[in-house]
Length: 390
Image (cartoon, rainbow, N blue to C red; front, top):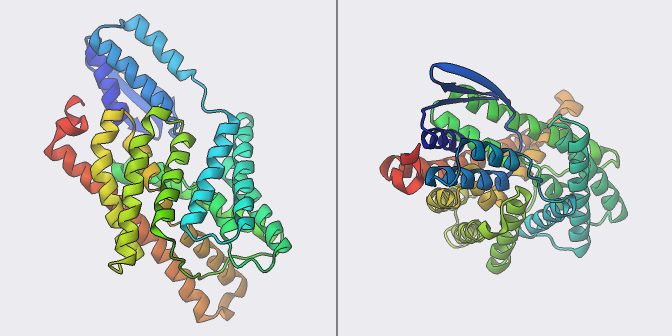
């Protein structure tokens, strides 16, 4: 949506009209009854480039740049470097540790292993990104590394009651923006692009599950199919949510000056979720829906003011709600069902189905909660969301 809007704004500012059509792997640009096809793979998120490109478009609209100057400025934006490898790795570690606090980590040993694993995975992903253009290799390898490190840690500390050391480093790999963008495309009946985004997100998730389970299997470690809910104090829950939002914003190269709004919204939403569960006895799905309604209502106009893509900013604000734990449990359950075959116990079947259902319902609730306010605000108050400039 922001890509189409920005391209049309730039064309109008330069004195001509343009039709923009987005597909997976391809952008069609129509100018003066002539079409040009551009190759594009929407697999990454770099909000620093988005913000810089928006500034170029604003300058063209104000008359500060002509067509030649705009082309040069956009080439400069395209050549911008992402955050450094160390910055990327530290953000991955901070995000994983923050998620572990929200999920109820107990031991400092687990926290240290999670930070080490996530940081190592961040470095590995950056290195692989320079060696290969295959977008599936990075999450697969990082998850495999996380599983291997967790299997070693759990061998050294067999009394460790948690499996967060395995799960949390993989949570930072979940392709949330693709899920939200895909859901938004489907809601707007852009079926080909929405289905492609969702398909890519599912494929990445499959690679994460495969890598994690393979890494754990190297040490003979498995994930439990069920787990106990740990109630974290409100202050820890909210502060950890803020750290997770900041980590993911940096993870996506969001300029530091723009982090305050999504951090504040994410903390507010997480506080609402905590109160819904602890005080009102809401289910995980209902609490996720409430939190995402808050985020969708606040981030929709904020994303336009920040000149940032809605899906990336919204996902950063609700990253801690992604049901990755249930997805990994479901994957472990499927592996048990394959291994045991007809001898599988009803408990295994029930636990696997429950984990899959929980993952689906929470994801659906999150997508619905984030997108409903956005669609309604775009319809009712287009000037508030920038839709009137499309």
